[in-house]
Image (cartoon, rainbow over all chains, first blue to last red; front, side, top):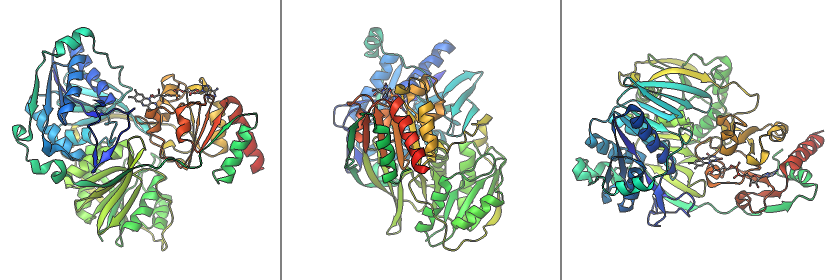
Length: 259
Length: 325
Ligand SMILES: Cc1cc2nc3c(=O)[nH]c(=O)nc-3n(C[C@H](O)[C@H](O)[C@H](O)COP(=O)(O)OP(=O)(O)OC[C@H]3O[C@@H](n4cnc5c(N)ncnc54)[C@H](O)[C@@H]3O)c2cc1C
């Protein structure tokens, strides 16, 4: 079984994240592998281990730094990496990103399963997995809380706002996983050492045969006009409970017409 | 201005979900044309009550959307919607920001060449283009995004718009729109779908008031539930509380759970970890009850109470009951 895991290099969720000129600032040096993609890697590695055969390829799209996300995947146990880096990709919207990923996955070739995290913890659009599946023309099974592959069929359970669903589709297919799916492994010393020798292919849009006009700012179907940090809340009140905090809370709610 | 299509989320029993009222209200401000509704027929039909409600909101036509595939599968729904977009010539599709709808939005956008923006909290028309407001980075930044394509697909977060009835209500026309799913879309098989039983409380995702319990409850949600009920609100939880099995996973609020933006959020025994904040930071008024004065949630709370939730919450509930008489 050949599995591609798509990973994203994002600003650390604990850091001061910023936007400039409509784009996420990625020069902070505090970039990291999107946490949810660790669940995707774990799911892929576990499937290959269970099958007793197969290969996991990590694919990312992003500036030079983004290769760190691929390296982390290799340290966890993936076999090879692909890093698409091209200035023309900057400013892509979710669909543009999906186009580049789709071309990269197609280039890996003969893929049985594509696994992604349920969302990037920066933009949080959750659009890329479904768009990627559509572009690859494979069935999408997003938000898998559990997944299993048996006899060429992938089956997932997913917890939605109002219902729990079980979905099934024949391979090749795409699955996105949540942080409930598994507990990602930590890279061990051996993994870290062997990752250094694993191949990482660096590709441009030209290598992928992708028209630069379809991606990046020029190809984006949406355009960020403005961005600003949300103003801090004003008039914040902090009180210590000296026995009447519940009464004061009730009064606050009534005063502000919230009760 | 071109017409607008609103996806009419409904319960398995055929009742409109509350955020649909917001979508239609918003749609009326974005067009001087007609507002169409798409009712995906999944067993539940648009009954008289739903149609009356939609008429009052200003929906002129309700399209009874059917498919030979299962409309709960995103690719199937997206194909049906794409066919309806072509038939009606609408320029905008609005849907509520559920994960299911976002999945369909991605497929629909690619199929129709539409720019898509999810988790919007405001939408306006500027020089003919749709401009969409949303927050990113766990609710710490606001952005305004323009859609550059003729067709726009936007999913709106609940509690972003105050729903109002139309000035001139009408009885919507019900029109059949039968579609055929492609072989590609039919590859996904919905083996089962189990609706979650109704709790009697409002839906977490669209409630006006949400009371959230975290690790500080130590597994006892009685006081959280009591306060939620006095306020007519929903009960939410942190991941720690759901992981411990104190409450169902569907109650989890945060980046990987439900996103809420109620008028009032009350967190009890919740530290305010960044993953949690991402799902609630856009709430109107934030109240935190926590015994640790250094808890990060106090940084974003309009009212912070340093105290034990086990005494503060019941006292507040009792006082609210007293005030209400
Ligand atoms: C990839 C990833 C995704 C995640 N997604 C989410 C998510 O979507 N949602 C989410 O919530 N978390 C998520 N988390 C977990 C998150 O990081 C935190 O661990 C979690 O939110 C903490 O929950 P908590 O506030 O209940 O617990 P804690 O952080 O342990 O805080 C408990 C608080 O209760 C207070 N307390 C204790 N006793 C009392 C008392 N008697 N009265 C008043 N206060 C009391 C304590 O002072 C403390 O501040 C995610 C983590 C990861 C790694």
